[in-house]
Image (spheres, rainbow, N blue to C red):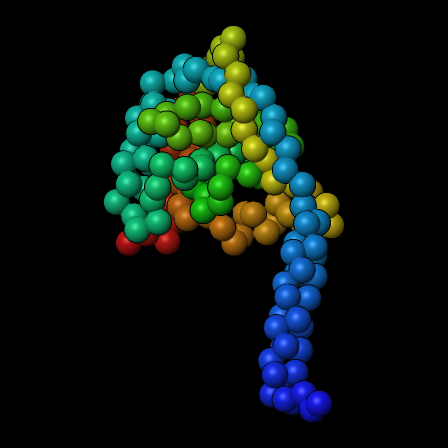
Length: 176
């Protein structure tokens, strides 16, 4: 009995498609997720309350806004000045974790605080919050940080922190 060659080609294509899907799923398992308990931080500086509320209000007007939007407060020294960058990310709450200080919860959003600890900005509480972090196995932390910094931010507000004052140093956003 002869087999219809078109059926064989269809079967071959289906099997090939399934095989490629399975390989693709296995290739995408080169990341790990880690859930970390982080201390919940209280904000001590009144101006920071206003800045975070303004950032959330701004983001709520954007097409990409949702309740799962993640924010990062990055505190670092640059050219002898303390800098604070506040960014929103279009990722689920998963990041590479390094030098995280804690998490601020504001209007149901998590603001992961990382970098230099500044006593006059935050107080640690007895509360903890579980935060998922995304850690790629094949990249160094610096490589992933570069990718994170350059490709997935929706909005970043830049500040200098001088003499306990926030001085705006510009804003960037994909939101119009």
